[in-house]
Each structure stands twice: as structure tokens, then as C-alpha cells.
Image (cartoon, rainbow, N blue to C red; front, side):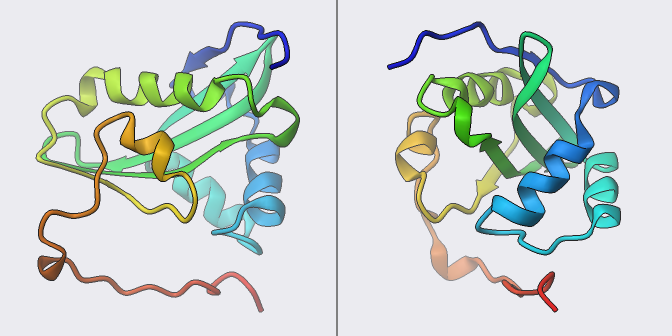
Length: 144
């Protein structure tokens, strides 16, 4: 494993490198390819965002859509490729789970295609009652 610099985490939206977030989501993510900058801006504006920084450079991101009382949905969690394998995804998840505004939520959800092991470390499981959950899902909504 490469040497690790300390990851600094902030929820101050003014510190976010929005162009970096937009580029990653629109070009490299498996869930939001083709998303517009306007939608990314609106999503950030209406969410609790966590930026992860190494030496002042943003290298990680997570976003929670929440009412701050009963429900949260964790989305857009990523570490940029050249900084993976250093434990930063765990660090940003620790910050998300420790945030005082997210304590005591009755339901905290997420969707993942390949990071079940990471999220299981933080208490996420398959739905206990999947028959009660429904969704409207448009996976290619941003691709024209």
C-alpha cells in the first residue's frame, strides 16, 4: 500500500472542487455518466456534502440526501482513481456516519453495484423487508 497522507474532510460546500466532482460523475462514474453540470450543481446545493482533501486537493466525495430527521440516502461516493487503495473511502464513510445531523435516522439507504464490503463495515445490509421497497429507476437518463 502506498504511503498515506492524512485525509481532511469538510462539509463546507464552498471548499468543494465542483468541476472535479462534475468530471468524475459525468465521465468516470458507473452511475451518472452524461450528467449535466447544472444537475450536479443542483444536487450539491440540496445535499449534505463531504469533501475529502489531501494537501488541499480534493480527492474524495460523498453526498447525503436527507431530511435531517428520519431519512438519508447516501449517493455519489468516490475517491479519484490515483488516490484509491489508501483507506480514504473508509475515512469519508466514518465522517458521514459520525456527522451529528445524520444520527438517529430511522432509515439510511444507498445503492451500490460493487462496494458492498465497504458499506457493510458501517452497518449497511440488504433491505430487511425488500417487499416493502419500490423505486422508479432510469439508469441511462443522462445519456442522450
